[in-house]
Image (cartoon, rainbow, N blue to C red; front, side):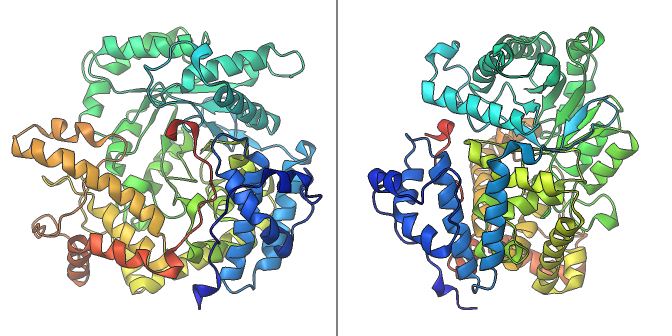
Length: 554
């Protein structure tokens, strides 16, 4: 295919007057045509990218433009399906009576959980949790945007609100917004209508952990949490002992469970599958937040405790949860689940062939495999595609279209080096915990597959950059002879290092099948070059459907 037919034009400065006076710019958005969207694009694009403006309307138009022109980019055969999808999506969004997000039992907790969760790590003013202690000091526009997102989610039945003490000013701002919503007599919500969750990291001392937990109660203005998680459990080898060792964090949090201040205990994780399964097997948890997406399992991709998992990673962990009647909560299907807000033209072509956006596909794929999934919102319009996926998830024709995209993805992966490679690429690849190098071997071979099969350059580049930064912090400590736990301490929420071109990994790759070994070695040695090469391919280019900057990134 000749991809040169599609290239987003450079956007000139916004012309607010031209936009506001154009009769086509109505709230009803009833002018979905290639010509109309194209004509409005220059002003819309500039306006949507202006961080100081309320970009909801213009951001939606930017997304509409990009969807239509992506269809043109992919040959023009899907344009009508894309336009029909846009019309259906905005009709639903503008009329709350057309459907609320369905609810399902959340394991053994007794909670009826919406299949979508409001994720609260992208709308706060700052990542610096110490910067503000009084919500009065928060930027008024940021707080108004946060409250608008909260009300918008609640209107659609998304009453599970998930934050963390580690999300900067999120708890401080969210607690105030929830208080105002509950006190507003024009709104129908009570505290018992909300499912409020926070997460606390696996800290070095119980005293620090409990002080942090109490701060969450204070900032969120609640007398109880419906759900609390150990945040990032399993990201380090020592986390299990830190939680369940003598006098560990579990003993510290147990009184809160006993007296009802915490209704249900879980853990969130970005760790290897084996570490996740070890925590699940304790039978001490009511639910888990983990990665398990249409394209893999993020940092656990390439980990396959059973042969049937085919390297998908956390599928076996999900199965363990089901046996134990634990709630299963998918982390970040939009960002960590393939970066589908910035999907490659190649991937977008696959989803648009079935009349859906990549974000919509990722969320629809996850529904039914998990109980809920968190959608991190910077603007109200970040919920558009996910609402559509949730409200249509039970429709047989819609499910058939989701399955058709999945078949296209599977065929593309099989085509990389044949079905045998697709089934065995992960075999013998150690996790970052299983070698002195700390390399995420499975993740990097997974990245290679995503680049080749689906053109997912933006996503791979973002994830690779974390491995690069991890290695920069890891190497000096390794030279000083630091302990394994000290080496891993700065990995944060994406464990593992990038591979280096000059390293000899023969010993740690001894269990890789002979027919895969040379290819695996080549991938690890030349990964940086590979990323650069794919970045130049037209099919790997993408348009970010979030043209505005989230508040904490400003």
